[in-house]
Image (cartoon, rainbow, N blue to C red; front, side, top):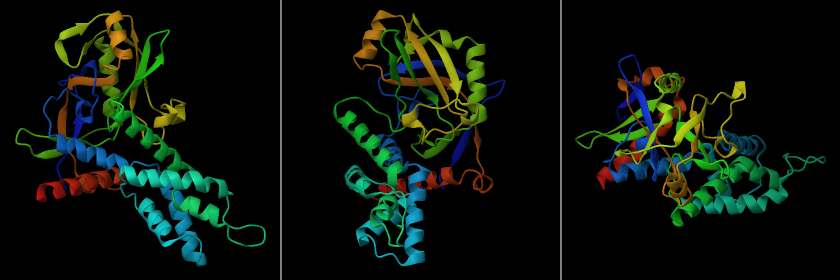
Length: 326
């Protein structure tokens, strides 16, 4: 397993000093401005995101598989059950496969009755196979991914972490989006090109946000991390940490992939030039600047509470090894 470090903040470390408006809000800039990083590593990170479909989709597939195993179901094809096991095992899918999944689910939705057996005790194959392919949760995820791919082709830069902000109000000139995502593995490369991972935990993000406002860092920003391009008339006026029990939810299109403890914010743009550049697509998201301490994480101690994170990291490392060997 590649090394993984938790980014931590204390009295000596600054945390976030500034949130920059950037044209390409990539994962590499999720906690500090980086200009040099191997493009292949970012490609690996993007590939892993093609397995970020929600647990509801995984559970649907597992439920259909359990029904087949317990009842000897004759529903579906061999291909359909292969797909079910891929989803149940959280395997990655490329764009072509996601298109096939979305196409199937869009057609199969008509035959889904929400139950596997009718009043006469006969199997409802439409419902079983709809779940086998991930059901509603998978259909929603696949549609979102396909829209993302299409946006990329149109030149609208999308990060693999969906780190873009949205224009919340053109009249009010407000943009909103994620600042930091909790428990999201970010792949980095050291000065020798050796890859490793960094992760921000919820408590660190909370301390970061508090220190950010305590030091009045919400009152300014720059363009693409250029210290010579500080801008006036742009400031953060709204900020919240995701806490679903408290009713602090992420935007609906990010709900399945954003964990509690993630930090979202909104900026008011009074600067005429910056607002025009946002509308033109020159700036698409937030990227933070700051300093953290790095603490090595002990995998053996993390498995029980962060198994999903470990699985993601293992998948990234596997892909990286294939690239190195080739």
